[in-house]
Image (cartoon, rainbow, N blue to C red; front, side, top):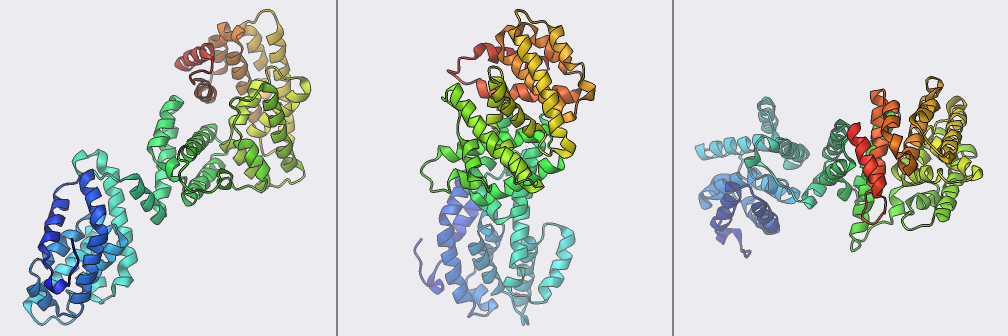
Length: 489
């Protein structure tokens, strides 16, 4: 549509276009609105420049389709959701109001414009009474623009939430539109992250594939490639872990989200972005890079050397630079990028005593970062005793379930963090040692007498399955036994 002076311009072509937009709610229509928004904004700007020099009654008489055109635009959420177009729409409507109405046309125009403002500014009948009083004060558009935008976004969010109840009024937003919404309206982003957390926690012991798909479908990992959104999600996860006191389910969700985010970040190499290490703010950049390093294809001895490097850096924070904030930040980083923790547990099967102490320390730090009242030292002693028995059992010619049962003889005296760590060690040995597969079900059944234990072990098994169930890994026997154990749980 070509631009020309409004005084000579026919509104009808634009009116037909707006009628078409409002008659159907489809992805194609939404895309068409977005396509025409720049021209529509230009048209409204030219219209405003003309209308502001005219009396309201003159404008209405000169442009008979003006009222219907502006009115229909006010009811289109994708038009009023575009802030520049919305602002010009408000300005045009203001030009049709009279501070001292002299005729029936003036009074009718005032009433009509106020009703439109009530629609834009309010989402409930109770608020509309207050809005009428507000409008009678003859406020300028800038005075109520912020509230207008807030209520329009709130209305869109409510319609998005109710889309499952009525698929025919459903709003389909593109990923770029969702990103724009979250960048402009922080509460909607925070609500999306919290909703995702709640839905994932409610899944209980569902396969990780289902959890990963839910995370992907939320569009949050993709959106987190924007540093601002990553910062918000990261802060929410940090608070969730603190308030849940390190609940293992929340930790697993944070790990899965972070893995999905890294996948999305690395998937599109055409985008100009910050380096990946910049997203994980930490004083020790070397620790960030060490935890970000991928273990795929690395020889066992290289993995062990790398793990020892990670342990050395974390021990420095834990001793020389110790403070709650420093230790927590290092632990939180280890949680988000926790792949090396699982590798440490696997390496314990074959490591020598000197190396096993380092690897056990890493696992103890993972499960017990606070070290209050020397509790981590106690965790290390208790976990090492069980670990040495596991190694001894593995070297024996035969294995029976009773041998594993005896490992839990002192369970009631263990620190809670020790209990979690020992369950993790036992599951790792049972799953990764083929000679133990014959007693795996009995052992896991013995370790899962409580719902808490069952949930923890299910989580470890699901994490193992997610890591090993990859074509070409050559671990089909392990994958099969993990599937069986998960089904029993």
